Structure formats: C-alpha cells, structure tokens
Length: 271
Ligand SMILES: O=C(O)CCC(=O)C(=O)O
Ligand SMILES: [Fe+2]
Image 1: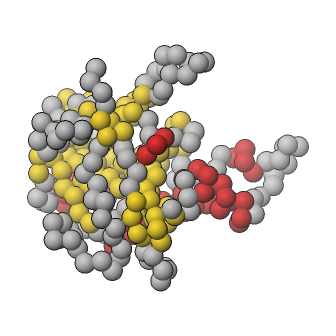
Image 2: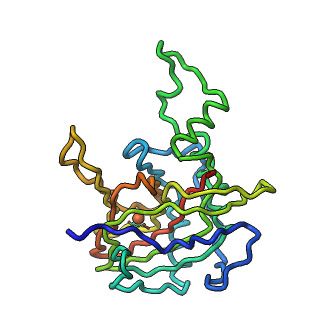
C-alpha cells in the first residue's frame, strides 16, 4: 500500500473576522439560514472512539440538509485532479472552498455545536464521585477538561469552509489531516487569539451507497490488528475527529451510487 499522505488544501494564512477576503478566495456565498434545527437539548456528542471521534446525530435537520444540498449545487464546484501534487492524498471529488468567518461563527454559535463542545462534552461518569454521588463540576474544572479534550480552549470554527460533493466513483484516499495555525477573532471578543485547529468537523448532508469515512486505529500491544471504524454518512450527522499529531489514518471510501455531500471545517482552539 502506498504511504498515506497528509492533506493540504487548508489556507495557512491567518484569517480574522475583519480580514478582507484574500484575492484568491471565492466571494462568500449567500448561505441559507441554518433553520429549522433541533433544540440543542435534544442533541448529544456521542463518543465513537473516546478522545478521537465523536458524532452528533441530527445536528442539521433533514429539511435543512435538502435546502443546503440544492443550494451548494449552485456553487462553482471544481473537480480536484485525480493526480495529486507530490505529498498530497489522492482525492477525487468536486469541491468548493471559501474563507467565511461569519458563516463559521453561525455554524458554531447558531447551532448546538458551541454548547456541546464547551459544556456538554463529558461522559455522565465524570459527574459522579467515587462514592457514586452526583457532584457537579466547577466552571474551572469544566474549562480544564475542555482544554484537555480539545487541545486548548475552544474558540470557534475555522473560517476555511470546504464543501465536497462525491458522485459515484469518487473518493478520498487514506491520509492524515494536519493542524493549522491561525489568528482568530471570536465574535464576542475584541482581541484576536493565536490559535490552531485541533479537530476536523465533517457534516454529512446526504446518504449514499459507499462513501463511508473509515478510520484505521494504530495497532497496539494489546490489539495488534484493530478493526477499522467505518462511519456511513447519515443525513445531518456531524463527525468530529482529532487531527494533527494525533490524527487517525482515515479515508472517504468510493461512493458507489447517489451523491455524498459534506461540509467541512475544523475546531479552532487557543494556541
Ligand atoms: O469525505 C470524507 O469522508 C472524508 C473527508 C476527509 O477526510 C477530509 O476532509 O480530510
Ligand atoms: Fe481527512
């Protein structure tokens, strides 16, 4: 098997809310409003592999996904070449990329994501002491746990928004996602932070045949031949996986029928 590659395609230039769009980026789309949504209280961050992969089912409603898939089809998507540049993973899909800090902020705080990531990321067990009694965490304890899980204090989402459409025959070969450094200005603050991305966010807008995102755990002494972990796209499901130094090898399997639409960003935390 050829050595898996790192992906690029992430604009490493620092971006802030007030930064003018860079000349090589597309004009920001007139995104449909993110409604209807389920109330945040109906959603959970479900650990698929603790500390590595989390799912949020029904993160976007199926009506909203339909609206988005047809809206996104009107954007100028470009087919990535089958022959990648040196050191890039083979990736064959249609893609659209834009720097849009405002949309990234809406996706963060206009949905359940911010709440799930900053306050509702712990397992039930974390709230029970050794005697089995319920013991709420202090604000400081919660912030410390968030920092440990997310690799820093969560600030928001990467303004670098990527849209993928995979039709039958298209795929994204095995690779690791890289962490990127950026300067980040959260909506509610006046000061920009040195920041970096630590987790990949994928939001599936459709289902299809094939097209699973498959993760390959590293063999360990206890498990020399771990089973791959396969996630089949579900309408409106969000997937978060750790990237950078602790990224699991993964791929987007070939779509065999239908279309797989994915919206991608990354979690941004303090550096
Ligand atoms: O489309 C997928 O299932 C995987 C996408 C991916 O790995 C990426 O965007 O880096
Ligand atoms: Fe990836």
